[in-house]
Length: 185
Image 1: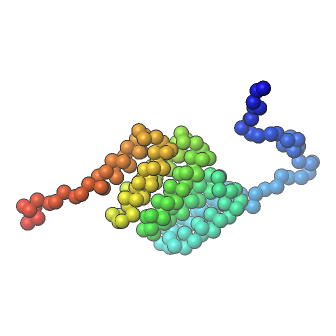
Image 2 (image 1 turned 45 degrees about the horizontal axis):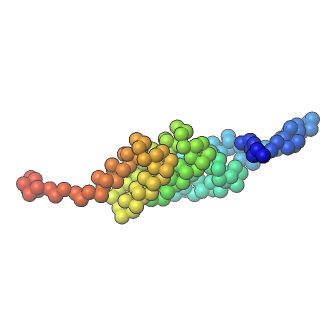
Image 3 (image 1 turned 60 degrees about the horizontal axis):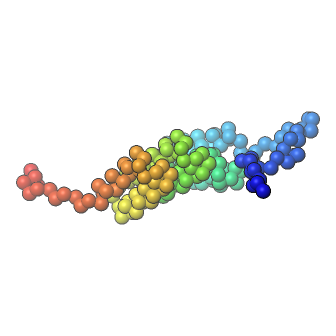
């Protein structure tokens, strides 16, 4: 007995083929992409005015609306969460910013697949943010988390994973003491 063949689109029902009755329009989403873009432009304007906390509050509201409208696994949701990560980093909350970026990378890989160029770019953004973090207690832990996620997505031998690994290694090495003759200069 052969196994059933499951198509990636699932079972097509008669409703799938049904067309709307004449004179009716399909229901539109409550948050069309044009409105989302306009709201994100407003977030950028507020941040550029030097009010990043207000921009972060606006972005959090957009995140709630987009998630309710499109769901967790949608590129609009990912984009808003990346904005939230950027705003957190802008306010010097690098750990939160990186957490948002890593979350967005994981959503992107689920939606777009590990080989998609946007996933690699999102991973690079997370790496760049982590690399720019000031030395603090969480930097090593966050770097290890970044390395784990990047390795899962891109493989242990990928360029981005090798760079993360090298940077973590260099951070783990104790700083070389400055020779005495250079201290007196």
